[in-house]
Amino acid sequence: MKKLIIIFSALSLLLFIRPVLGLGANINSETATSVTTAQVDLTEDESVLDGAFDGIKKFYSYTGFANSTSGNVIMIIIGIIFIYLGIKFDYEPLLLIPIGAGVILGNIPFVAGNQTGIYETGSVLNYLYFGVVKGIYPPLIFLGIGAMTDFSSLIANPKLMLLGGAAQIGVFATFLGALYLGFNLPEAGAIGIIGGADGPTAIFLSSKLANGINIMPDGTTVKNLIGPIAIAAYSYMALVPVIQPPLMRMLISKKDRKIKMKPPRAVTQKEKMIFPVVALILTTFISPSALPLLGMLFFGNLLKESGRTERLADTARTKLIDIVTILLGVTVGASTQADIFITKDSMLIFGLGAISFVIATCGGLLFAKFMNLFLKEGNKINPLIGAAGVSAVPDSARVVHTEGLKSDPSNYLLMHAMAPNVSGVIGSAIAAGIILSFLG
Image (cartoon, rainbow, N blue to C red; front, side):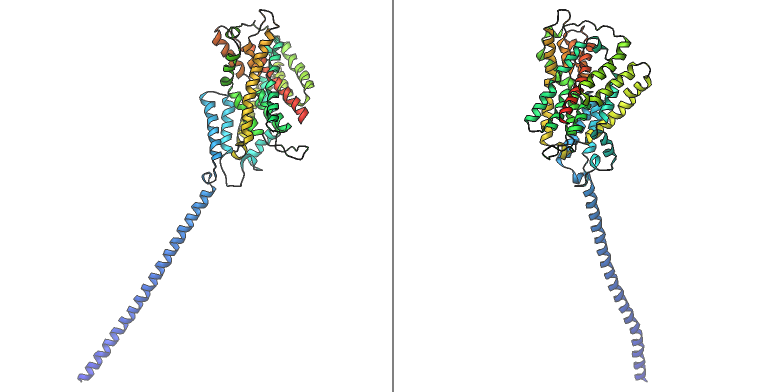
């Protein structure tokens, strides 16, 4: 009996322990599974982190920070300086602010090797840049200039047109300088027009001669110099109040700066209407290649003076010229991408531009003094107006007027200075046409 109790107790214990052992086995199995799952989760977390890090690196590779160069930074700073000069000092703000914004737009860096902006086929800027490359914008600018220009002072005193012609010496001096520095004939011709201090004319001529498309007789392709030439021309136009006054004071004595000129005679409306027609025929027969510029200039003036097309004249001198100025400024600025603009050629062009502007100003001033040698007392001209022979309208005439007032507060030279100033516009266009005839 005692043995039976012991055996029963042993079996009961065995039956009790078995499920316990089985339960323990299940716990161990679940624990092992949990450990394995934790390891898998850790591996997945690491993979997610690696993927996120790779995504961030890829995103960074697409940003401008990863693809910018020192050249991009330099050009963006130049764009900001242009905007600053236009706002702070009122240096041709209608030109410098759009150009400055364009310079910034053109130098936002993209993925390396993926050229965008005005050079990317199909982009908006590329379509707008078409007007620069094909020389569409400059004649439209001339149309607006003609519609806002009063040629009365030139009609009243035609001999002052000689001062506008004398200032064009800067064009041909720059042309020779460019040849000396190694530029080929078409490139030198396009660079030379910077001496006329006329941005639209510079763009027009460079789009014909130095556009990166034309082929030389020896098989070489001319360089695309539109951007550097345009920026140089507009920059020196904006710096008229800085560059010209010291030259005036250096070359013209205080006595001569005080010369008072006779008030210009009154010009009839009939004369104003006849002038653009006659001037159009004469100038374009002299320089037919300048027809797109001179034709639009005098057509715009005819709209103004005819008395029958005031609505058209108003559109040309306001809405149209404003729209074209915006498009021209932004696209020209955007063409100055660092890898294209920051080159030895661009630096040479800017140097030549500065020299040519000085030569043009001095040419006008000295020729005015030369003219006085043949004029009787009382009919002499104030040599200061010779500086207005460059075609930076109307800034150059304003600078002449300001310098005259400094020497004599009662000496008003603005209307007299406008004559050589507008003739400078005509002269630079004729010079561009002559260069294009020989080199185009």
